[in-house]
Length: 170
Image (cartoon, rainbow, N blue to C red):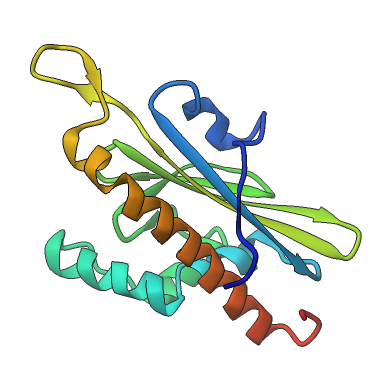
């Protein structure tokens, strides 16, 4: 598996807003070459692994999506993709909010000389429990281990596909 590292949510990133309230994580990897945010978004949301998630969203949540829609999101021609809506975006980051408003999905690219750092992170906004206390919810807590492994696999899959698509990446 390509080198994927757990990393602190970068200060001043779009995801940082959520790191102090609820749950937020961040994973990163380095790749040779200058990778744009648009390239990263398009590759990330069209990997075989993410297509499995898209299949599930189509049949369970009635939120279908296509590779063309992923490319439109990457090219900033769309603000919605599958179960997510763009919450914020800049030249190096995109922050997406799920249809229930409880989770965030975040991608970021940073460039350094001949390399790009690719970041993927998630956030879960606490809801209110029956007692009125702030809570992430039983289901999320129960699936946290799976979520961490899945996040690493998603970023790894995107990195692998970038390697395959760019002749300068090695």
